Image (cartoon, rainbow, N blue to C red; front, top):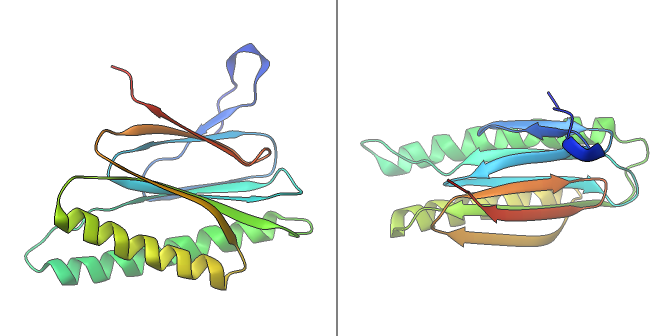
Length: 160
């Protein structure tokens, strides 16, 4: 649920991991990227947008089984997000996407992130969404702010 912003700015809606939010009015969508990725969707003509926030977590006795289940559930959530986003559009003439990710250090984390990013990118291309930017950060968590009405993403370090 969006929270009114201070100083007359647009309301801000926090999107927790493994959830998404679709907006049809000028709103800032926000998420903390900490071993997670954000898929930011918008129409370059309308103010509509969506933010999907996914985890890169892969744990368990058999790493590949967990990764397969993670990828399958990520794809289902991505599909729901894209479908709800498209349903909210009036015309849907210029669908664009930006992806921002924060990945933990380590070879296993990097491999998982690469697999998820490849899957997300391929799905979005098939869904008619043009990826115009992708940023992957390794290390410290970041605060993402996405304003669909302007197609703007801002990544800031978390402050203590």
